[in-house]
Length: 172
Image 1: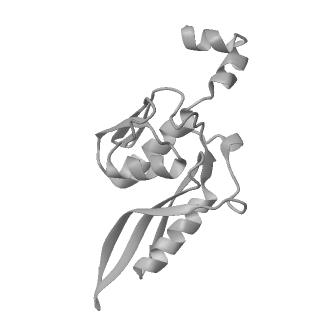
Image 2: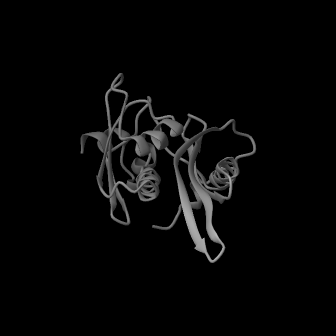
Image 3: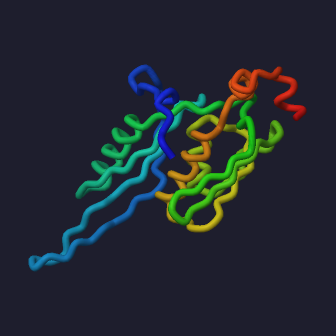
């Protein structure tokens, strides 16, 4: 799916919180022995509808996390969050990972697995039901969650596009 450039956000004016989703140690065997390096999958968000993810690789864990944060700040998107939840159900896929996200009533909380939870909490979603189907690979689950969030549309925008009233969008 092509990324919607209208939803892109600049990181400069935002106060972002970082969450490390996964750290992976990678070993390269050379004739001189083993060389270790680390990759870090990081999610950043302002808790108010702006979220991004990034991957950093380095010889040190802290350096990998820092690179991941920088990469995440370059890939920020804005998602529609109304009354602490998302506007509608959404199913998305990346590789073998599939994710399903559904809006939930106020007070439900974030019902989601660890990888999806990090993305949804960083985005500022307070009440949501989410299920990760298929592969549990954190990289693909994060990308699938982002695909689902990017496909979300505001009810006002849908009504305007279809040239119908906002009431008709909800009542069919």
